[in-house]
Length: 317
Image 1 (spheres, rainbow, N blue to C red):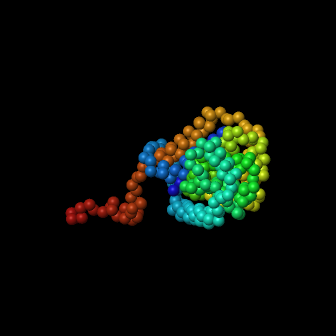
Image 2 (image 1 turned 180 degrees about the horizontal axis):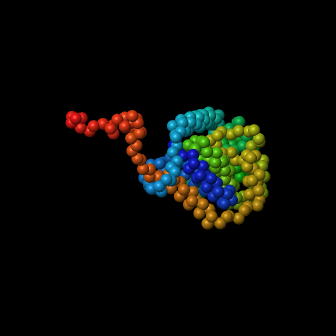
Image 3 (image 1 turned 30 degrees about the vertical axis):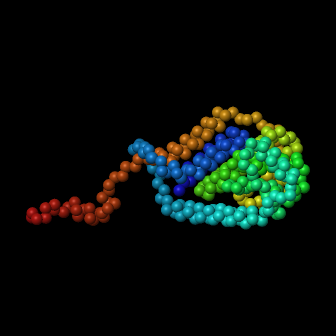
């Protein structure tokens, strides 16, 4: 069971590192969330006991059992929500159909695989209720397209497939699931949920950069994002990654048309080391508490006085 203080501190340091990095790269966010996810395992590391100065206060959690109960209830609630999302996604994907009789889509798909250096072919399926392309599938990578995709021109299909395949190349869906599990373990930590939302946005930035690296025109790609962005109120499966949403569209378009200079690596590296070092230190260092025996904690005052005044040799008058 993670400590709330340690959880909040690590998440806060991670957010500082992300801020220093310009909020565009997902690496630091992913490392922070991975640290939070593995934090309960740190409890099994060998402990280093430090002798505190005489009279130094030691914090004792008097209500530890109450906290454990509350934590387990929250864990059950958010764990149940994850299972419901898995079941909903399973039902959702069954409503899709394989791509068929679409030579243009298949041709552009083959070209996209080649540009991204993908040796394994990714499945493409058509979903009738879908409004914008999504990438999904941890073990069976799949790109889901709306029915309208069958009428798109080659340039639009190229931008869409390069972006969605980029999620699979980068293992963004695995990163998203790991972030979801980190939020499950640290459901009480609002900073963990902020980190997860930021990670998902950063993955979109990274995929946009990958698309531009293949030679796609930035302005034309920005127009494609605007045309295919999900309207407000629309929903996609919780375990899928949509190509564009209204919430992050503005930042992504601005980044495409006016990319920023990469930040200095030193403050990022220093903050990252501080985050990991803090997690390790708070998980292994423990105060050495000296326990003293007090007769009053075992016997009542009357019993202590009786024992002190009693004759140690009752057989001798």
